[in-house]
Amino acid sequence: MSNNNVILRFDEVSFAYNETKIVLNEASFTVRNGSRVALMGQNGAGKTSLFNLILKQAQPTSGGIFLTPKDISVGIAKQVIAPELLDLTVREYYATTFVDVPYNLNKHIAKVLDAVQLKTDLEKKLRHHSGGQQARLLLAYSLLQDPDILLLDEPTNNLDQAGIDHLTGFLMTYQKTVIVISHDADFLNSFTDNVLYLDVNTHKVEQYAGTYLDVVQEIGLRLERERRQNARAEAEIKKQVAQAEVFAHKGGKLRLVAKKMRLAAAEAKENMVEVRQEDKTIRPFIIPVQSFPSDFNGKILELNQISLIKAGETEHHETNLVLRRDSHLLIAGPNGIGKTSFLQKLALGTAPGTTLNKDTRLGYYRQDFSTLDFEQTAYDSLLTAMAKPDEHTLRSTAAGFLLDGKILNNQIKNLSEGQKGLLSLARLVLIRPGLLLLDEPTNHINFRHLPIIAQALDKYQGALILVSHIPEFVSQIRIDETLDLGSL
Image 1 (tube, rainbow, N blue to C red):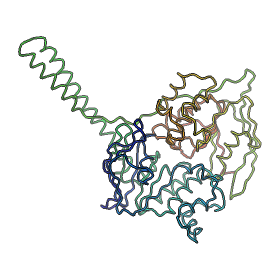
Image 2 (image 1 turned 90 degrees about the vertical axis):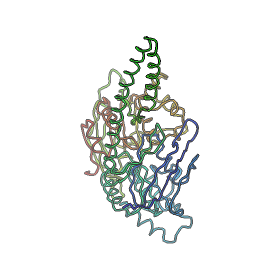
Image 3 (image 1 turned 90 degrees about the horizontal axis):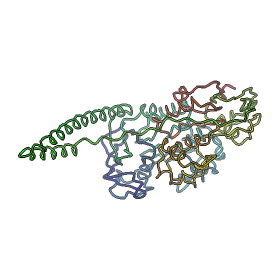
Image 4 (image 1 turned 30 degrees about the vertical axis):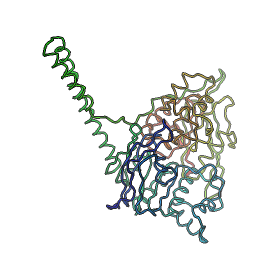
């Protein structure tokens, strides 16, 4: 539990990548030892950048960042494993934690893997683990450092419910300081006692005490009070301006009265409460379905066999599924059973026992965004998704997903994970697929966007295969059939 000792302090910290990409503007806040803090903010606000500042991987433009005592350690569980590390074995990956690798490294690894409930071969390469398993490997990596401050960047991404429950229980009993970035409201509310809100518009950090949902409610009430206060002020200002206009036309001393009234109205307008812009949400959208030839029989995909992994062994099971236009399939099962591998093989056309209509156009949302070319700009990525280039359609679609001109001109590798997710969704709209493959499309996405995304998927009229560990999200989407790999 927290105590009164401040372990981390930001003192009027400013940070920017360039003149147009400002992250912090004289931000000040404190974190007390043992506290559990949720770091909130819109996609692209700079939450991960703030973590980099704490880790000293970036330096502030001005202001100071103070750790007390100076020699405390900071560890992080990042959102994703860096692509250049994916060919390391588990043991090689964890060895990078140490300057001098201990002789009993395997013992240290076994301890942290047990803490995250993951069994794996230490000689297995990182890329051969599922998304959920990689999420646990990342958390275990941070625990191996035994840090005084633990930073968790979207730790529930790719985790099934059992994994989320275990992580929640672990954090509720964790004795050290934790700062968490997550868009999972229920997860955050279960253990946080403080909230830091990074405002994407003012670049300030607001600090609140209480659980996550308490703070969300408090912010909402404050906004409503400020709106009412400003509405009353606006009405009074309009009244004074109108009276000033009447007096100004009557001449004599009344003109002086009118002048004073105008000055008073202007001063009142300057003193109005600045209402913070709420987090924007993406616009409602539809994913258009491709046009099929006139002789199309409606059958898009036949699935006669599926492979899965149990106890480290590959199993093949016969199925008898046919996906037609406007049919939605949910693939369920625990982490590591092979859901992501199955979707990947479908996309590559290498899944055994499957027959895809040759005229079908695929829209594939990968949880690691590896279908994107990170060296491309976001603009070029959207352009290549279109059968016929159309500037107006491209920019209009991008704007609906909060991708403005500045973001479009950025290389994808410089976007936040949340922005990469929104870019991937915008690409699906422009691709106009006949078969939609979605692998954990809620990862990294602001929870405010999820009902809008669910609505678009619910209304999608092509064939859809969905993998998601978020029951509330799935419940908003029409599912015609469920294939539970765990029950095979």
